Length: 455
Image (cartoon, rainbow, N blue to C red; front, side):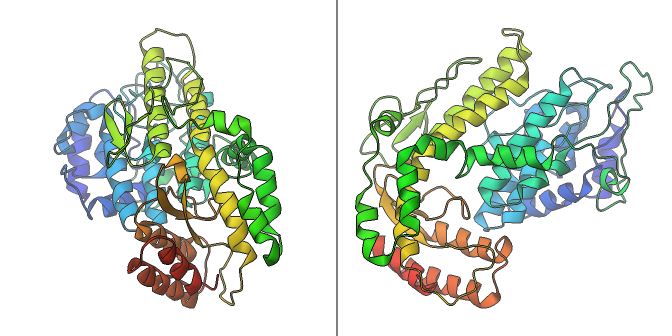
């Protein structure tokens, strides 16, 4: 856990640095420290060390030796812990912490981008804000905020929270005192950037909504679905006697078949800024059949996202080394397009199954702001070859598919409580359904969970 002594030790190692600001977003450091307390295999002393320059970071990095990646590694572990606990707020805090600006040696100096790929694709999809006085910072920081908003929406958090990751007004480049427009107050539990109204928002609320629409239903993923998605949406309001026709009509259009190949390279994104995304190949008969650069995955969608993340790192490295003359914001835009392509197939499958489930809805439970907490069991979720479980509504309960229904039901029950604001009796019914489903297999498990919620 973070202590005042650890923070003072870190500050004491700073030499000729920009005015410290590592405690400006204190609320997120505190939240991440709490998550690290759940499991901290690398012995990272405190989240604050990830926001310091490398010399100071080394004092509290534990077993981490790549100090350029300490912030990402810290966020990655915190996210893993929050996800295991079904803690949506925790996942959001880890994501926001990942996007906060690191200290650098002078006003206008950018911090180094981590050259490793995070375990969680949600963390891998974003990077830290850069000094607002650095070249191209306004566009780059805006792209980071929008990418963060997308990941917040994907885990079920409020995407507008991405604005809280922003930094300060630009300082004066060349200022020998390093006195930019910063603040650093260890005794402010909220964070002085908020209490002193120093936060500069990188984007508008409408821009965030538009960015989120690109990766959620109604945005780019729906666009990829084409007429098949429109037909599925008509099924949502179909009467019960017509549900058979709606469910049976699941043949993808010819262009959909081309977009989701079942052999060869499953990565269909064609952007090449900084190099092409590495191939995603399937090895039939393996426990983790999808492979990207030697790493294996349970489902094709996750493998495709990892391929997108690797391409993003290639792009950043190519720009930072001078191989290509582009802005890093273009790398992030390409990454978002790549991820949207990867998620398209799962969205199509879910919409068709959701139409039938909603047609059978007959529940007296108050679901809060949400409408469809059901689970589906089907082949093709996230491009899986085998049948798996997933939320029927990926817009309300966006989570990758899983072979273990407990992973999905735990996420749904947590979101019903946190984001949907459903009453206690609904959450209790959800938990009872999760327990019933855990004792069953396949469609019977999904049916048991859905029945407990009145579907």
